Length: 64
Image 1 (spheres, rainbow, N blue to C red):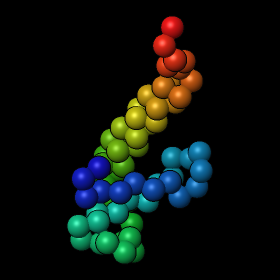
Image 2 (cartoon, rainbow, N blue to C red):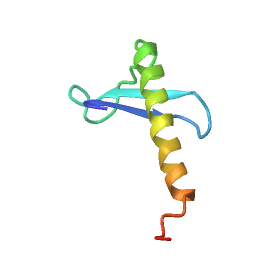
Image 3 (cartoon, rainbow, N blue to C red):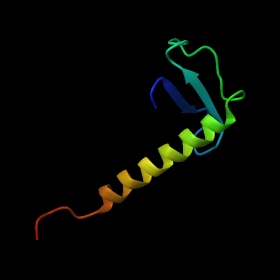
Image 4 (tube, rainbow, N blue to C red):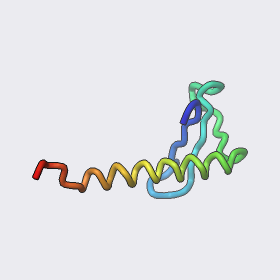
């Protein structure tokens, strides 16, 4: 979201790495520990977007 990138460190966990790409394009400094609110907000936003994509993927969009 914007300059921020959230990356799961392990699949299907809430263990994330957070990077500010405007200051850290090489993703070397994980800011998740110092920005727990941003991690939580971004993770919730991503989960909502993913859920909407999954709902569309299972929906029959053929004309009836």
